[in-house]
Image 1: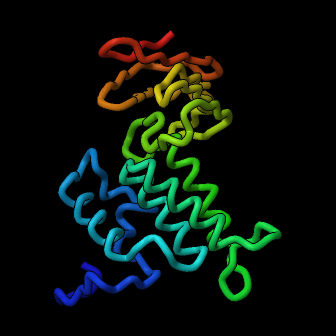
Image 2 (image 1 turned 120 degrees about the vertical axis):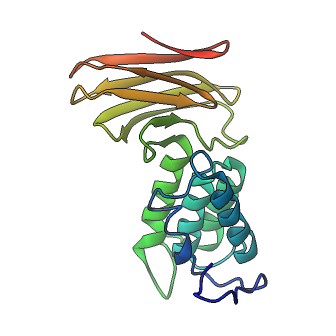
Length: 199
């Protein structure tokens, strides 16, 4: 609920979604750890709509990525570029607000990698439009440098450079693997059959 009383209006498409702080940027709501609350957050986002000012679309992009709906997050990214970005690539909101620029960049990252729930999740919100790709140099909690390659919307491999020697848990879809790491060593994760492997 947005208010202390149940006065939420499903037709209210206001740009503010601060009552979803637990979904993003916090980590108390998640489709993995709190699926019922995540579903409630989805209802809020559906009611608020996909338009707004640039900064609000940046927030909504991140929140849809946290809900692991890559196609909806991708739509918000498109809306942000088409309707919330000026020709000079600044976020527009009478006349400029950096939140949309930073939010768009953060949202792309959240679509490809999330590490706020105690594990590193690969391609949690990959949209159908990004069928094949590679990304390098993403940072995950635990001081890991992560590179990911995918083909036909499926993980090909991920490389994790351990910069601190922290223990690591990697999740892809419903598969997970945990392993100890050595500082300075790179680990390659592959998805094969019904499990993940580390090399």
